[in-house]
Amino acid sequence: MSKKNTTKYSAPALDKGLDILEYLADQGIPLAQLEIAQGINKTPSELYRMLMRLEERGYIIRSSNSGKYRLSLKMYNLSHRHTPFDELKRVARYPMQLLAEKTRQSCHLSIMDKEQLLVVLQAHSPNPVSLSISEGTHFPLSMTTSGKVLLSRFSEEKRNNILARDSHYKKWNREKKEEIREVVHEAQEKGFLFLNSELTKGINDLAIPIGLYDSELNAVLGVSIFSSHLERENNLEDIILALKKTQKDINTLIGC
Image (tube, rainbow, N blue to C red):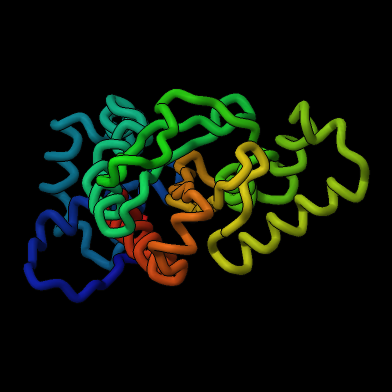
């Protein structure tokens, strides 16, 4: 079915072409012109020229035997010229800098890499003295606030598989394993986490997810704060509000 959205500008021809591509992608099988037309509530004659152009541009392929259309690999190739995380880093840089300026705290963006947390982008605090986490640094998922938030974005089965390969988690007793599961559940319920750092004494970590649940595009935006700074210079609620706004801005820019 064609989706009807209320927009400021109308581009019927473009909408028609996108409807065809999206419908073919949804169905996943070759379809005749009549089948496509019925699927997006158009007449076959309305689609003829559009199908011809999409075929000529290489977006769809028409079988010489059945005459049915299917998607080519062109869109796949276009989408893989840049990885999702390349685009995420590009669009996140400016919102993260605004966050750092507003909260006067450094912030960092992390993803999962080989069952570890990998810092891929940092925005520095304008303060003369602040925390800095170098891009390219790896941390244990199970030992970091950002890692626990990232774990909360996966299905239980996938999360269990990840933890089963975590060298720290494997050494824990049942009580400590249950503790991390409770913290992950808290992240799912609240949408963010605020915890004392397990790796650095005197540091409070605040982390919020970026991207789509249980997908390839999952990241975490984190702020690590000196406990003394939090008490004297910042209001935690203000930082959380700023972090949520940055989360929304980045998600909008990556289409989530």
